[in-house]
Amino acid sequence: MSTSSSSSRRERRFDREANGTNGGEEEGSISSHEAPNSTTTKHLRGREEDSRDAFFFDESLQHLSFNQDGGCFAVGTDSGFRIFNADPFKETFRRDFDGGGIGIVEMLFRCNILALVGGGAVPKYSPNKVMIWDDHQARCIGELSFRVPVRAVKLRRDKIVVVLEHKIYVYNFSDLKIVHQTDTWGNPRGICSLSPTQESCAMACPGLTRGQVRVELYEPQNVTKFIQAHDSPLRCVVLSLDGSLVATASEKGTLVRVFDCHSGCLLHEFRRGTDRAKIYSLAFSKEKEWLVCTSDKGTVHVYRMPEGSIAGGGNGTTVTRSNNSSDNIASYHYQVNGDGYAASSKNSSGYRAPPQSPMTPKSPSSMLQSVISMGVSANVLPKYLQAERSFAQFRMNRNGDASTGNYGKTDDRTSEFPENSFGFCKASFSTSKENRIVVICADGSYHKLEFDPVKGGSMSSVNYGRFG
Image 1 (tube, helix red, strand yellow):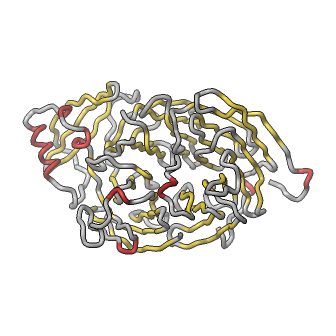
Image 2 (cartoon, rainbow, N blue to C red; image 1 turned 90 degrees about the horizontal axis):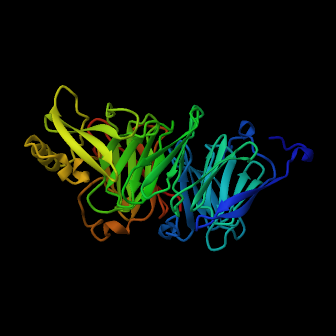
Image 3 (spheres, rainbow, N blue to C red; image 1 turned 120 degrees about the horizontal axis):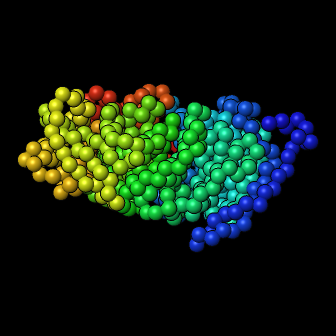
């Protein structure tokens, strides 16, 4: 992008459509002061429930988000935004506006381009606009306007995705031309995930029915997949970095499911707990070996991704999952049938079971194995008993500096805080160490956790800090 001459500046306005809440269409507009070009962006040098659950935030914090690889995170406040390095924890830059709040901050890796949406009591920009901010120039270089509030924004080097409550728009980053739009089930939380790698481009969002996930494979296939992931409405959806896997959780919050994006097959089913919970975030590790989950229960769960879980064709209707207990492995063959799973089971041997956490109680799995060994059909058991439990866990106290790794235990510091009192938090895998997790919370606390990749169990807290 050249800024040396005013003649190179291109003013564009396009009449677009923004979806209304009733499924109809309303007019919107897009203004590009200078079309951003990813090849010329510069790295930051030495600076780097409203419907989005804002009611959990501290009064000065409006938004929390990691960048595409989890190496940084951004915080929107009632006076601007801040950028932090995730590991090691360090504030790298802050931008304060006079009397203006930022409700959404979306980074583009570590470069100077960000997407901003106004928020807070006195928004800096309209909540109906996405402002493309160039921090190198300290000004907005593009603007996308809609007739309804923007719920989320996702960026990659070649695309901008804008999420409204009933519609999603996809634009080219280079010229801000719209390339795709799709209707969704009611999406007030702005549920959407965009893969960041150059090799492939995938987007996952709510489909057209309750609990359905829509996966758009833009490159190289340019196809659409619909996956009926849950009975209940979706709560969280995330893609792996390469866009090959999608993890989902529903409003119920007891199960986390992982699907293959290309075939639509159910690969893994993980058990978060038996009580309802609000899943706040899901994130894959870079190599897709691990999946981390946070919820309003104040716990962080890490799941190991077993290998060789796929069976059957690519129509997303037949999968095999394995659940080990003691010395045997019970394999369940699930046939997707409407909103449920009819299961048959058989005992097998000769396969190495994925390692289990020593903190995982043996009795539920052993009981399940005993029931199956007696020939009782697995479909009479609740789904959460058939799912794999977490490999590593961490329980946070309300006051973060007193955090402990005593999962499933209480002491004098934790008993005064009910589990449902925990606020919004997000987790991502560290870019510095494979078995390290960074957790950021809406109370302004920062947690760096580590888990044993062989034994699992309770995670340890290796660093605690505050950013708000």
